Length: 533
Image (cartoon, rainbow, N blue to C red):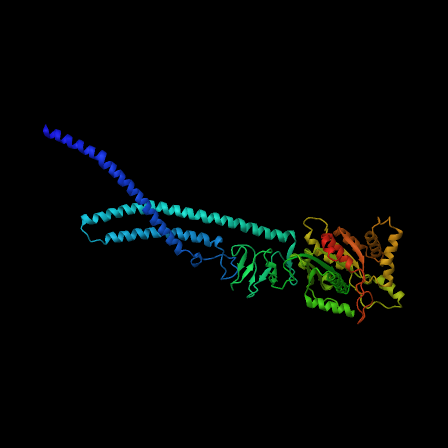
């Protein structure tokens, strides 16, 4: 009986020991161990994460750019368009790998101890606790560090992406609002953003815009930084056609192009020579305008012709593009006026027609030589004793205009609409007596004065009406009908591009050559015509 009582007392004492001593003590030790474990895991994981950050501080040492849009072999992709994500991935992988490496080092240390088992058991207990710490708490801390790092970097990247998008859109809006583009003088292709050459090494850059390889600037293979937007100076770089590599007159100009259309010896080049001379002469009167003529050699040649009375037919089957680039000195925006002159044979040979500028020019000038009509030549011979002018066109102007319209109208056949592109019909050799009597300026003014109400007090309407009546009288009603059927905005202008018969050392004395072009320009932007005033 006494043993039973003793056993009960022992059990009760053990109960009290466990409840009031061991359990609280274990709780305290467990809490302390957990706290120490969490702190230890934090420190170990933080150290391992920092080690991984240091090891992967330069993402470009391991990043491989496999993009097909890579501009050149040495091009470095922006941190925010690939390398940044690659770096975060490597850092996270490295942090986990460092945790495993730390656990392995502790295990190797424990395995290397040669103490008796009753002493070695304590390091093994430590290792078991450490394993729990590193795999549970360490994993949690590493996940937290990774999440915080990713969120921070991604938030910053979002700001960069917003800035990039805003910059890209603003760059395109500047080009769109100001109608800025580039037109190749050789292949005649248009490009919103042409190719640019590095000023240091001459490397060609075909996509110099805010993008994966640079937001504000792109670094060339030679190390030179190139501006990637219009606003920060991209247009100051030398530009070339991205399709054929030909030099461009300008990459930052609002474009305005006019195509000259006429048969062989219709006077296209003579008209061009006179117009460019007078146009540049007027521009140079304004000291606030910077002017560039392109190509300069061709302009120099035309100036010699103007001074000496020389004129030659164009033989090139690919249109010659004559451009004048001008801008106000206090402005970054340029204007480029381009006139395309091409051999008259092109308009008589349908297989040769296919110039790109036919479909994007802002205006057309049809050159009509009245002497291409046999009846006009006969009339001239009867007045001048059987002689004819030195130069005149024998091309059938009806066929020329029809050929051009057939190619031009391909742009409108899908819609079935008439074209509203402004068209100037220029009647050449209006200084010749038999023509001047019919459509010369004195004749037009006299007619207008006597019939102002008929022309609604509009001199332009009087000029158009008198010119149409003249063309109809010499048998060109088909030409008039063809133009009327295709174009909604046509005006007629009598001109004299040379002012006299062609003769050596007798300079040009033109009249009426500015009006056909300036009227076309004014249809699009009256501000451009103000520059001439």
